[in-house]
Each structure stands twice: as structure tokens, then as C-alpha cells.
Amino acid sequence: MKMKSAGANRRRQLLILCGGIALSLLLLVIRPSPSEAKATWLWNTKLIQQNGEDIIHFAKKQRIKVIFLQISGDVKEESYRHFVRLASSEGLEVHALNGQPEWALQKYQQEAKDFLEWVKEYNRKAAPEEKFTGVQFDVEPYLLDNWEARKASIVEQWVENIRVWVEAGKGSDFEIGAAVPFWLNDINYPGSKARLNQWMLEKFDYVAIMSYRDEADRIYQAARATLEEGDRKKKQVWVGVEVGKSKEGPGVSFHEKPFVSLIGEMNKLVKLVKDHSSFAGIAVHSYEPWRNKQGLWERSLKE
Image (cartoon, rainbow, N blue to C red; front, side, top):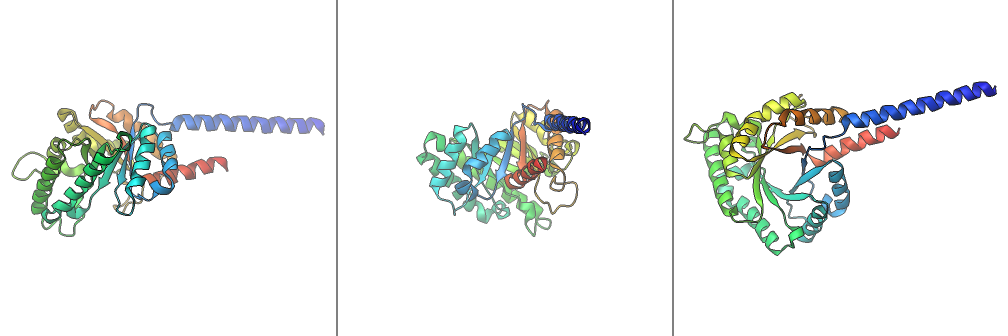
């Protein structure tokens, strides 16, 4: 009986050892590339009031360099100061994020300009470690009901508004960027043969391209034209990856895919874009579904 017991113990120890080796190998395989910078969009602004330290801890763990933070009137300036100060202490940047599809229209030009002025005034009063280092406009006019019917007119208003916003931001102590769809290279700048993605890169300091697909090769193909244009213009391009639920059908988001698939495809993507000087990093949309997906995976390892 003792001999059988000893043999059973050795088998258990061997299984535990093999399991530990397998887990270590799995962690090695899914580990993000050391050179890979990331960014993420944080839409639920109230989270910075309750979970600021937790957000920054996650950001450090995932090698996030920039947080695009939605600006909300429901959050007091002191909360922004505290969160940005906390992020700065860990080497992270925070960009003030805002936008509506309607901001592309001329009659809403001032509303977007007011947002820009708010950031300028906030930074003027803030300590150096409390300042936003960037502003991101997330204006998606193709979500308007009349986009297809009035595309030409809307694009004309959109580019004129951007011209006004960028001019208003000149001389500020932050960079100005925009979240843009990958297919802007299919639209001409009004009255010109130039593509709209070319014009956007000329105007903005950087763009975050929403190249949402669930495979590295397809993400790269969606982003490639803008990356190449960024190379020529010496501008920075964040390549977007979707993790949240998508209404655009299959093949767009990693929402239904395993966490290891997300990490594996992002690592492949880094290898595909490594020769582009414009590549700023991967921008994951967005913080909450990304955090939830990682949390579920980590809990599954403990079970």
C-alpha cells in the first residue's frame, strides 16, 4: 500500500510540474512584444473617480502609453487633475477625448471649439504633471442618418470644421489628433484629387485609425494606406483594434474570441507594421471590454 501511495504521489507531482511548465509556456507565448506601445479609449469617465489606481495598474501591466479619456461634464476638474497626476507619475500620457457625429456639421463647429477651449483653460490652470498632453477628436459623420444622401456636403463641412479647430489649437501645449475610419483613402478631399486620409494627416499631429478586424493580416491591410501616408508625412498613426461588441457583423471585433487570440494577433500585427516609421502602437477599443476579457482569462487560470 505504501509503494502504491508513493507512486501516486509521484504521478501527482509530475502532473503539477507539467501543468506549471505548460502554464509558463502559455504565458511566454501570449506575452506582449517589449517594443509594443499601446493606447486605449476610456469612455466611462466616472471610473477615474472610483478606480483610478486600478486603471493605471492595468495600463502599466499592458504597456499602455496613452489613455484617450472621454471628457464629461459630470466629472469635476479635481478628479481629472488627480487622475492625470497619477498617470504622469507612472509615465503615462492622458489625452482629452470628445466628439459627436454632429460635430462634422458647420452649425456644431463652435461646440467642438468650446471643448478645445476648455482643455486649453484646464491646462493653463493645471500643474505640469496634471496637464493633458493631447486632445483627440472622435467625430464620425458617417453615423449620421443622412450621410449617404449628403456625403459631399457633410465632408465639406467636416474638413472646414477641422481646419478651424486645428487653427484654434495652434500654440497650445498639447498635440491634436483624431480617431478616423480606415476607408478615408477612398474619399477625395473636396475639390481635389488628394485623398481625405492624406489631408487628415497633414492637419492633425496624429491619427488613431479604426482598422477594426479580428485578424492581424486584415487589420494591417485596413491600416496600410494610412501608415504609408504617415511614413511620408512623418506623422504618427495608432492602429486600432476592437475588443468590444460590434454591430458591424462578424470579423470586426475580438469580443467573441479568446483572450490568447487577441494577444497573439496583436503580436503578429506588431511584426507586420515594424517597418513603418509612422506606427505609434496599437490602440485598443476600449478599456472596459479589454479589462473584462483579461480578467476572465486570469480567473480561468486559477480554476
